[in-house]
Length: 224
Image 1 (cartoon, helix red, strand yellow):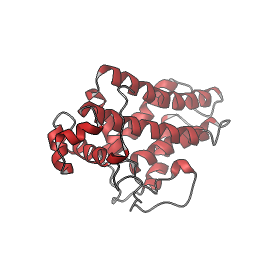
Image 2 (cartoon, helix red, strand yellow):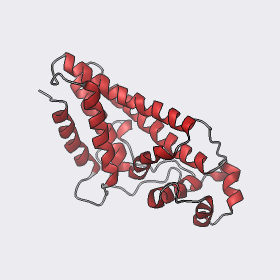
Image 3 (cartoon, helix red, strand yellow):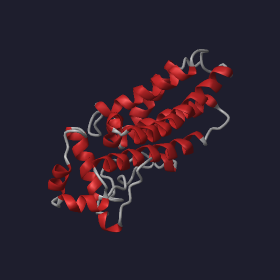
Image 4 (tube, one colour):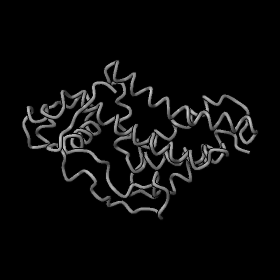
C-alpha cells in the first residue's frame, strides 16, 4: 500500500506485544492465537481509538497529539500525515488477516466444505478479537485513490480465497449450485458486520460466535 509508512524504534510503546486480558480458548493452531494484543506503536494505538470513536475525518492530528501528550511535530516525525496513519492501520489489519486466512485454508486443501468453514472461522475470530481494527475497514472511503486501490486488492485476495472454496464446493456438489461470488461476498459482509455490535464481555465468546457464524455461512452456501 502506498505511501509506505516507516516507524522507528522510538515510536514503539508498551502496547506492542502486550498480553491480552481476554480469556483464551483452548490451544489451537497459530492462526487462532490472539493471546497477545496487536503490535501497534503508541501513535497507532491512539489513532485507532480516535478513528473508531470519532471517525477519520473528525479526528485531527492535533487531537491525536493531545491524546498522546505529545506535540504535532512529534507525530509527523514518525508519520508523514494523517492519511499515513490510516494506511498503516488498515495495512496491518488486512495483512494480519490474510496471513491467518492462508494458514487456515492450508489445513484442508482438498475438502472445500471444510476449507470454507475454516476461512469463515478465521474471519470471525479476527473480527471478534481485533474488533476495532475490523471496524476501521469502513474507513476505506477515506483512503486516497492509490491507497484505496492497494487496500482493495488485498481485500480481493481474501474474497478470492472464499470464492474458490465455494466454487469447488459447488462443483463437487457439497454446496448448492449457484453464484459463488455472491455467496462469498454475502458471507464476508455478514462477518464484517460483527464489528458493529460485538463485545467480548457479552454472552458469546469468540469461539461460540465463530461456530454460530460458520453455521450461518454453511446455510448461505446451501451445504448438503
